[in-house]
Image (cartoon, rainbow, N blue to C red):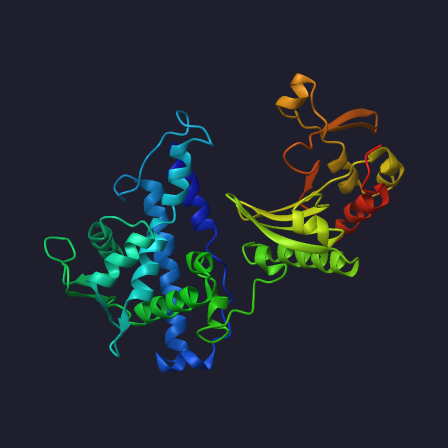
Length: 363
């Protein structure tokens, strides 16, 4: 991988949500097509999104996206940030087409070009005509362009001749996501958009905010067990969003949550992989407990990290050092909680217990 756009576009592809063979579709959408037709269009649209990201990974410049070398520009550079935003470009194009158009009975979208231009400006999409031409590579046809560009005060027609249900699915998902402010769910083609009516989204308010992105059923099950256990222990939580994915942070009291500080646990999607972060301030208080945990748990506590610049300068106030199994272990805690693991349903409880037994005051 050479360019930042490739790194972020691969994540966009991986974030496409896995869907079951059968999933609920609200009856309100029967006004557009049958459930089976909508399901057919949804599945083919999923394939189109995936192929689009593959083409970006193979030739980003040909897909009209910027190419900034990862060896020349670091993670925090303007160029890396631009690439991260541009990785959403084709999802934005699909999105704006879907909710700007009027769906016709024959499965075509009729879009007023003035409205399209206005919406493209809002989403920072320039040269929309060039992107519409690119969509032809995936079977999506645009009629009404003049020399490859959209003409003011006119109409364009968007169609997918091989399966008219694709455009219907695009329309339904985009309008629903726009009505409920679920843009990223549209980008990820979350099938749960179809569960409720045009103006209602009842999901994504708990652990599924993160776990829906996991492709492993085992990850999803373990994440739910962790969330349910922390709820039983009266933790409260809020939602965060990193560049690498969403996360849920858990706090012992509402004042910490409201100030977004002192979270004991983070349940995160890190590039669609499950990571469970937790902070232990008084590690010596629980070393005996850890030594009697299963081997998988002990192993995670014997891994050191290099620490950050604060450790090198001797100014680190958040890192911890301890002795375990004959080794000296250092765990940085300046930017993130000291520990991160990928737990299983057999061992997650030990990490939660260790945090609670240690208490929240560093000694």
